[in-house]
Amino acid sequence: EKELIKAPEATKAPEAKEVTEFSSSVNSEPLEALKLDEIRALFDDDDMLLSILVEFVDVSSEIVQQLEEAAQWGDSEAVGRHAHKLKSSARTIGAHPLADLCLALEKAGKEDDVPEISAQMPQLTPAFEAVRTEIEALR
Image 1 (cartoon, rainbow, N blue to C red):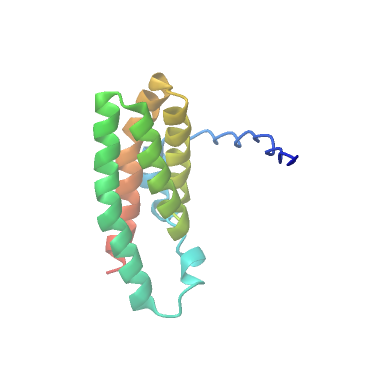
Image 2: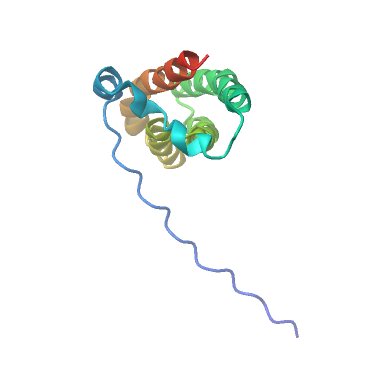
């Protein structure tokens, strides 16, 4: 007889960090939205870096719009899916406050936590715009 391989037990995902309001940090600490030193360490070519950051803004603008639409329609699953995509991209370019917010939205979407989605969504546009503003300033 063949022996069945037992799947490892599922591990609980780490808890999302509490997300703070972005408006205060955006106004007082404009460079907090994007940690350029993290991604700059990967590239010797500033033109290449800028190209990647501009591409992030272009692609992410659409994801932000999809996230907002999903939240308006009450589609928690889609909120989680879009937040996951944006979280990964934001983390890659060093936009940690945006990525942390997306982590909270992803978790809320997966848990069908509509009140949490409603509480976090108003912070999405300011967080994304803070990143966009910093990237535009590099041009």
